[in-house]
Amino acid sequence: MNAGSETRRILLVEDEKAIRDAVAAYLERENYWVTMAGDGQVALDEFAKRSFDLVILDLMLPRVSGERVCRAIRDKSDCPIIMLTAKGEVEDRIIGLELGADDYLVKPFSPRELVARVRALLRRAHIDTEPQREILEFGDLVIDISGHKVLVQGKEVDLTASEFKLLTTLSRYPGRVYSRMELVEKVLGYDFEGYERTIDSHIKNLRAKLGDDPRSPKWLYTVHGVGYRFEIPHDTQPVSLEIDDMLGGTRG
Ligand code: CA
Image 1 (cartoon, rainbow, N blue to C red):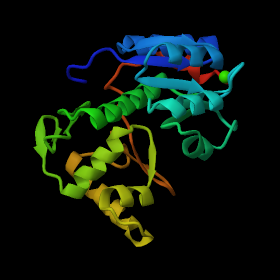
Image 2 (image 1 turned 135 degrees about the vertical axis):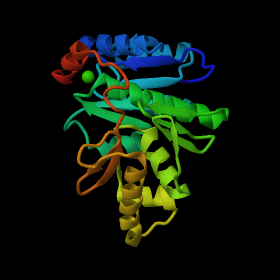
Image 3 (image 1 turned 90 degrees about the horizontal axis):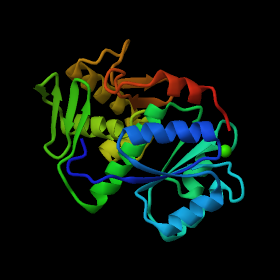
């Protein structure tokens, strides 16, 4: 999907061996080059030695904490960082806003979701440096971002500019929940509350055009009381149940 891309290097920092090995195996299967670090000091040493395209960083680490590693990397590089945290360790918002991480996942997480976030962040980092044709594929749904085209089961769907913007905004970060307010700002460019309901009607139209049933959605999910999120359909990427189960039961 990533046309002409060379192998991307990922620094994976996690002290829990079971999670580290499982995530590394999953990333390697997706053809990423993975360097593993079991504590914060090793992570900083590795980061100093060579360049990485992305860092996956556990928050609670021996020797040097994930927080300090994150700040140290941010001080000298724009390298995308995904933080891993255990539930209740720290408020999500603090990680996003203060540490300078680009994204975060709360444990237990599915490796499939982590890979989706990795891909999205690398894509974004890549777009910032060299513009190229970008096509996202989610099962029957194909979004040609640069060509401004959307296909469902091979047939082009006619979307308005706002619907297209809404769909691309959500699908760039599968699994991430967007509030209506965020979507208003990103899609419509307004910044006041009266327009939140407009997002609901855009979503409604978008669902109708994509043939996505809100009662049993394939792509566009309502997050009640908050907003919406996009999901990669389950049939798009085969998931290894063993790894999912292992990570699902692990903490720390
Ligand atoms: Ca840890």
